[in-house]
Image 1 (tube, each protein chain N blue to C red):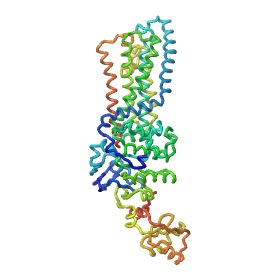
Image 2 (cartoon, one colour):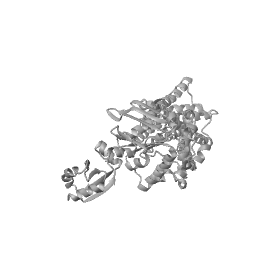
Image 3 (cartoon, helix red, strand yellow):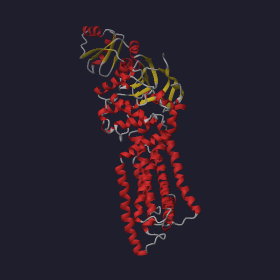
Image 4 (cartoon, rainbow over the protein chains, first blue to last red):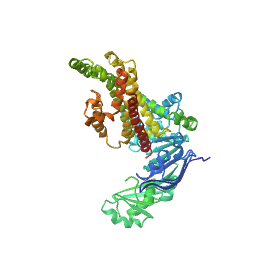
Length: 308
Length: 280
């Protein structure tokens, strides 16, 4: 059973001469956890805002829950939960009040919202902060509250724009755990991120975006299989020597990437490759064998790194 | 609980978009009232302290001096306090209406961008704008009522029709409120704009709207300021109701129209800008 919740064809958004989203196609089915991966300015947030039915497209077609957002914005928004990049919480109100008034904006009854707020506070691990003003919360707590707020109406689609940007590692992991639980329950998730680990953790399927275009589309695992090798050997020779040895290294494997501070060598067996490098007496200052990630996929597709 | 256990009803069963399209303005109003309620002590204190101080110093003090020098019914045939009261009532209304349109709009678009969160629900820009405006009118009405009650023991409301000064003052508040809602909606960068508006628009209007003396005592060079000021029009109407200040019938209508125009223009511009900014 794959019900298609979002269908976009030739979706385009222009601001004057600048093309923010450039003729893209994608489909999101119910229960999927769908990601938009790309650097800042790739057009992810613009695409999200078009889906959230607050920004009108320039051309192309998009249908969300079977409706056109240009004509049925409020009707579509009734079934979305939106977690914007900045939290947009009401700082003058308490944690519980923020959840309560948001429920009211969806026209939900007081009788429904009251117990719902308790549930959401538990989900967001904010029970003790219930009557605290939002101002006093940490960044991670605000983020969890924003996600809880988006869930007050039990949305069909939960949209998260850069959910963990600016959070410390511990706060990120708590958040991922909460999102993972939602995913397990079959909530359709839409996530934009420029963190490859986040995309790998949370998304069943993703599109890699750059400069408003879709570069590739698949599951994280398939993307890595398709566009990278199993492992990567990272070697550093110091800034002066990296360029000198690059030609020699290039002959040892299918592909290398020379970055300002290190060289990435792509191979299915990283350790074996490292032995080969050492055998040639090239003596890197440091070396590291790791498995390929979406970062490598992005590098391959665009020639640039995700975080610049 | 149910979120973690997975008992979901789902928004398709829970949320009625048509209901929100009908009642959204009320939901915005409701949440604004909740924020106002947080500040009720400060609001109430300000709304009581201001009139009392003004009436004591200017109303009673200046009034006594004028009575001593020119007789007790020197201005427009009534005591100075009676003459001044409707103007103070309208000024208080304007102040409240401005507070409750400018700051929530700045908060919503700029400081915490709460309007964008509201717009991510079925709520529309029009509903948000009108909801803010109505909640500002409620606060304005409460200011006027408190002021009015304080005026009673000062014997500043001789006519039996004096209570009609309340809607007249509310119109003044609505005029300024609608205009300021538009200004705040257009204010993209400069918060300093409000300092400028306060100093170069609001203050002159307050001083040159026949507030402290009849407008026709001013030379023509500045008298026109009053003609364009909703405060003057509301004050004239207020004086008509509180002590029977003479206004011919057609002029009454003229005053009313001049209060209505800023409301219509201000709201139209504000709502257009609300919708535009949310959809950009």
